[in-house]
Length: 321
Image (cartoon, rainbow, N blue to C red):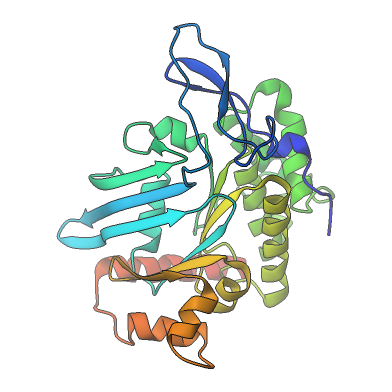
């Protein structure tokens, strides 16, 4: 299965909040870099107090989240909570508002109405603090084909401000965690579709995120490559208690790998629960496909935003194929 992620990759580095230097602890009761609770001050030259993270605070909480593009309402009052340590699936048809929600959570879009909190930090008021807590694999490909795998991950290490003295080790650890050590010095242009997606996962992991956000991470991949990407996600998650928010159109993936799922349609969350709970609500012998149809119907209204989402998805699938 490849190398197991080391403690160095999973250990959150010190960050600055409210003028204080702090080190993160994972939720649950251990020391730094282990499952533990809260944050511990490293130094507070200004005398301020670091933000406290308690076990009761979820990994992600969206409340009344709303976003429009002109007159088109893409996200319409979304309430969502991702618990610590869980894999949470956000499902829905193209144009349901999933990617817009992800972009709001990752601070790529401004929050105009409602709120987003990541481990208690407001994405509206503390966007830089939120960015330090998350890793993000977008729907569109982000790997540079003209760079090697190692160079791609090193670039993200610089973007995420990984300390210079730690970069080489952290890059190597991230590549090992997704099984790309042997291919690290090959050009990304020579990688298969599954390897490209694992490379992008390494890019997201190099900053030791506490919340990993994946927007259709296995789109366009064959079943074997899809399973390989999920194996790596679960391996890293198991090693450090990381929370995962994922969107996918593969309902079998959601059924197999997600602890809970939310179903979105026309900008709103229509149902939330474990896959088993949602299937049971539809009656004996029902599948997640039946749940999907029950909450989304068979007809979608036309909109330019939905068409853009479909075209972007198709472009990514063609490039990975």
